[in-house]
Length: 254
Image 1: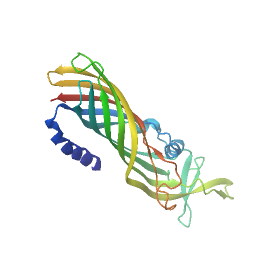
Image 2: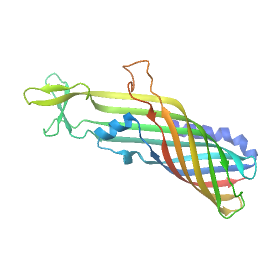
Image 3: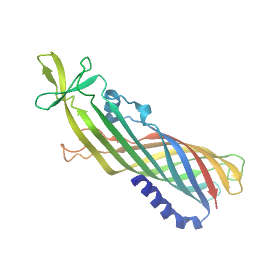
């Protein structure tokens, strides 16, 4: 819901600009997170989901203003979100007489399967310079560009959490076990700054319309708060917001 409101607000803010010469683009794309920070790695190492589980489609739009026939400025807003539930690999859960929950190796039957959901949301608002070296009056219009962006992001982990840093030993079963806690850890409405680069082609399909194919790389890091060690994702390195985008767009020229 928040992502839809951001996209709608962006469209409203862009409407006064439509009086100038430029392009409005509506697009659908596929986002592939780079996922190179330690929180990503811990989830992929311990849980049943993988990097491919967080590839997802997204929608976006942009406004482009022409400076010259070859150079333009673009404001783009995209939205990516993915929520994935999974279970811990290699562990089952037991509840003892004190109602404390423990993770045992899955050689045991267990009372339940420890699991949680991992939710990621990234909404980049990007400012770009775009170059069309062959101009804009060709059957195929190649372009390249890049710039900076403001990245609005959220991370949430909800469900069972096995604390692998707190190791115990069951002397009866002679096996190492770990406590399980219920968690709803989140970082909401965080803001980071990053950069991006892109390249693509536009294909005229009507007098004022073109079809667009684009590849974009985003680079950004989201820092977790460090002031409270008992809150949020304290202790993790900056969260990797980077990723690759492949998109199809419909351009209207005015």
